[in-house]
Amino acid sequence: MKILYKLQKNYKIIILSVIFLYILINLFGGQRGMFSYFEKKEILNNLQIEQNLMHEKIIDIELKNTLLSDKLDYDYIDMLIRDKLMLGKKGETTYIISDNES
Image (cartoon, rainbow, N blue to C red; front, top):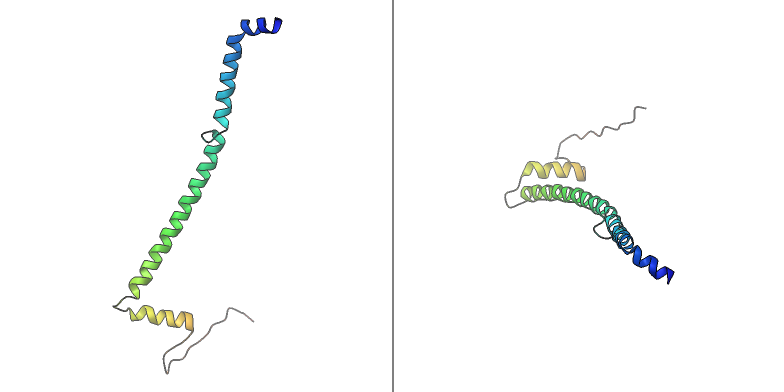
């Protein structure tokens, strides 16, 4: 009986403390809490960086696609052949410079 009497006397304090505890837990935890906010903010930053990288790759691929379309850019093809295949034209002298200072 004493416990029931104390609960009846202090029910406002108990209800307010439960509500305060509920608000405090939801403020920091849960899907809309502070910790979740920082996690989602970091995910957003990573996705924006990834989006920028993908955009740069798309621009690079579109540039290469336009250079290799029906109307060929012979200077670009010549540059690719020289860089990738290490080939030159007939009668041309090719020099390879090494970085060794020995």
